[in-house]
Length: 195
Image 1 (tube, rainbow, N blue to C red):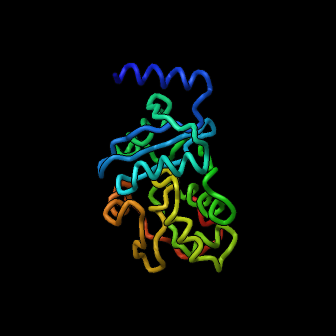
Image 2: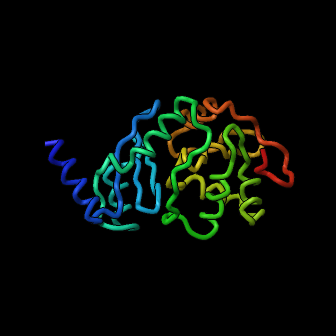
């Protein structure tokens, strides 16, 4: 049965009938669902999110042509595995920003540029995204980030160093920051994202 599904999925991919492919990825803290369009990675979901809800969101906001196609997600899965093993410090997979717009997208693009092992405060993120007074909006952009881990919202913390929130739970945020040996946020300065 699995081989038949794989063959049908491959045929649908070959014929351009799949707009969103998804697959499961094992992570040290539980399974993830990852989804990609031809443009790139569009969604990473924690086990705490409803699998059916994630697929329904993709069908509604991207395209109803959603299919489980693990082979199409192999590059993402390999990079996530290497990251969790501490061997990868920057993701190279293309990103599809279709689920991000306006300030949310700008904040997430800034977040994507935060180097491995570094953290910013929500205030620093808002400033780097071009709206220094939009600290709460920066927090909302991270809280609703559709591509956590790869767009590393775990690298954004409260002023004073408190963790803030995290969609995967604070234990996961703490685990990811420890994996990266993350340094506390540096005082506001020009060139916030320079190494």
